[in-house]
Image (cartoon, rainbow, N blue to C red):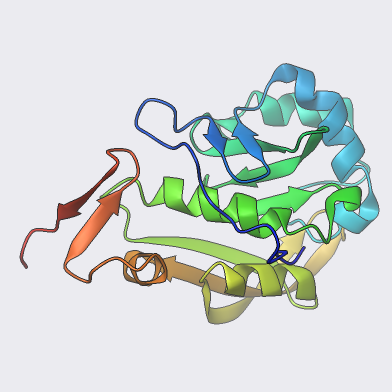
Length: 206
């Protein structure tokens, strides 16, 4: 799931009006739909995918997908379907904490980094957000590499339940702060940038 330097990540369209729908260099991030249920079941129905995900059961049924799609975890502007030119390829979310999964066939194309960059930019379009958290099961080297590339820093390790795995396992806890994000985008320390407003705006003095 590493980013391919031949395909630089660039968010083409994010604004207050259309933050639910974002275009990157190769991907469309759009709101989830009830019709995505089959693709979701096929994607996380692969144990290679679901075993690393804390909240996803295995086997994963259509009823599981329907419950997810009707829940707050699938809310517009917080969770997006990741689609390339061919098909639905996974999900990225900032609901609660940052998380993502990709279909097994989509691994190794840099989609996690590309979609993650857009989702993190959308998260910090909210000028009141100070940080975004994430986690991964220790041993999930692919996700660790993606999260570090996205700018997350490890803050600790804790035990976490992984439903598909059927037990608890140690998980690394990470976060990216607004300062980290601003620095990674080359923004000045005394200013914040809101994608939602499309401008670089002065931050109030403290």
